[in-house]
Amino acid sequence: MSQAHDLSLAGRVVAVAADRGHHFSKPTQDRIVLVQGHGVEGDAHAGAFVRHRYLARRRPRLPNLRQVHLIPSELFALLREAGFEFAAGDLGENITTAGLDLEWMPLGTLIEFGPAAIIELTGLRTPCVLIDRFRAGLRRQIISSTETDPPFKCGVLGVVRTGGTVAAGDRARVRLASSYFRALPAL
Image 1: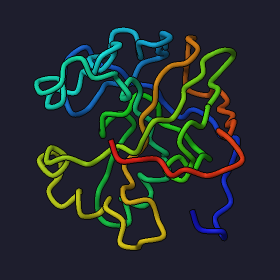
Image 2 (image 1 turned 180 degrees about the vertical axis):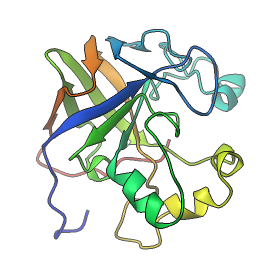
Image 3 (image 1 turned 90 degrees about the vertical axis):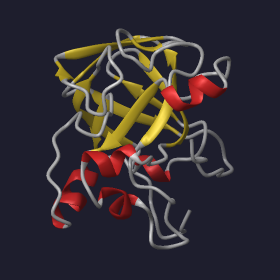
């Protein structure tokens, strides 16, 4: 992490989304329910073991470190400058935030949502070939061009440590993992 980059430790939820099917985009919802150790209730990626279709075919008993996908809404503004228009849920995220530098957070960071829910960050979302099938040229826009920035700008992944309901407008509060920084790995 660059020493000049200060992390924002408070933000808010802009939107929430879930989809029972394995589709690239997820429809927004009024609220989602996070289930401890499982993920978003009723979402295709929920479960104790990996649900990502590619990974699940190869290693079905791999622990699911991708239970919840979060994207900062600020990414949409950056992509808009490059000619791409997106709405919440379009990139497959479950929670769209504002005010949080998600990709800069250290591994193990806890984010509290609303009155009770807590997600632990496990890694950066790795952009796959489907991202260019969704919008041609998008993958190039979300891969970092510098060695000092996180390698990808397409959100983060996490696991549910404490369940609860999350809705647009909820506060998001960050608890950093420890006094040492370990960058989020690519998942």
